[in-house]
Length: 230
Image (cartoon, rainbow, N blue to C red; front, side, top):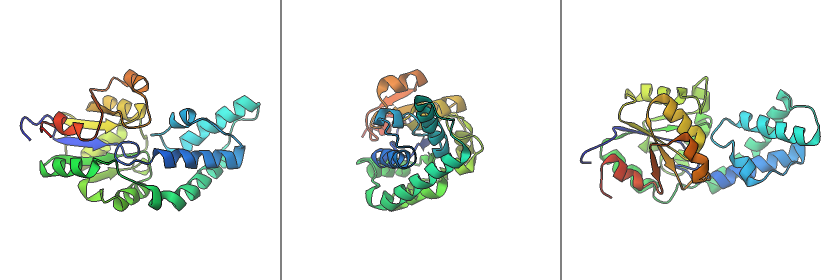
């Protein structure tokens, strides 16, 4: 790549590299219907995507309790929701998980250009690696940081800093690509440039308050950002 702008590119996983949001929403809804008979909209479910699963269920169960005048959710209920989600999701995961269409080509060209690549996700590391293995993408990433690798997951900047430490790279010259406000807030707080992925489930007006450094319509657009002409 000529005039390289970045030496390191970090990616969120779901909705950014893997086309998995539909499966995630289906599993969230299944758990909420099973335990609470609660049928939130896709818009409501998407809001928490990109944060740890237990946090999402606490928020959804709290909303359901408030609407119905029930007591706030407790740890037992959140654990039940999480377990039901994981059982449903794992049963369908390997069959339904897909990379976005231009993921292989884009990551190949970035790797060949010598860029350091990493994943920063709110999924547990083992689940994240499973998706990357099935889709043939794991070999592109020198580091995968999951929610269980940090004390404070996204939108806290800790996962970004942990990824950079593992790679031996600095914040200067690093780009973090994500499809949710949580990704963009984490990157901005960590002191790296951010790219808002417009192919994910979050609308531009939802992402705009996070003040991304760049807007990208496809994964392939990242090649131009890094200095290569696709």
